[in-house]
Image: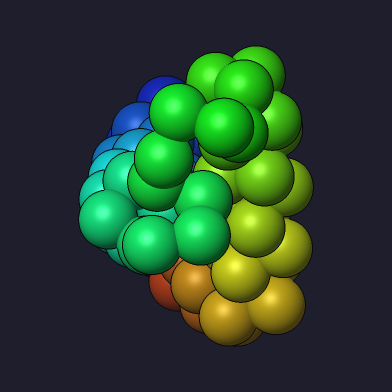
Length: 68
C-alpha cells in the first residue's frame, strides 16, 4: 500500500517537473544561453515542488491510500 503511494507521488511530481521544464526551456527570457543550466534546473525543481504540494495532489492521494 505504501509502495503504490510513493510510486504515485513520484509519477505526479515527474509529470509536473516535465511540464515546468518544457515551459522554462521554451520561454524567451529563460530559454536562452545567457541563463545557466543550473539556474534553470533549480527554478524548475522549486516550481515543481511548490505546485506539487499546493495542488492538493499529495493530500488527496494520501487520503485515498489510507482509506483502502
